Length: 186
Image (cartoon, rainbow, N blue to C red):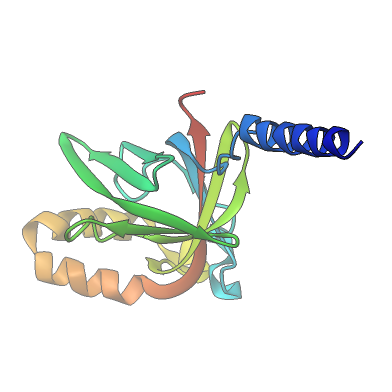
């Protein structure tokens, strides 16, 4: 009877061990190849509410933004602006609901800390708090086409005056930038 009990116990342990080996380790949902679809601004002060929810692709000048987060906690990203391609590699980690990019070397000097808003098998939404120069709501109603035309002229003919005028219009503003990425691989 003692031998039968030992054999049963050994058999049970073998089943538990083999079952635990069969279960694959869960993969972090942020792992994959991601291509920016769009972005938007949120959490803006009242004087800049016209920008709330503003969506565009390439607002920062990029034509594409690809982010690859590998299972081994390395990443690469490629940002294309016109004919210029900027690449960065490094390590990534998550902490609760945050994603941190740690570039090897100097990096691209763009956002490296994100809040993970959503991570599904097809979509990745990241946000980061920023300070950006934006035009207050009041200028949407008061800036005339003639003034815009003058800015275009000053930009090429009088760059100092152009910068001076822009500094009058644009103001540093706190906002949340929300990136929406689509998965490019399965």
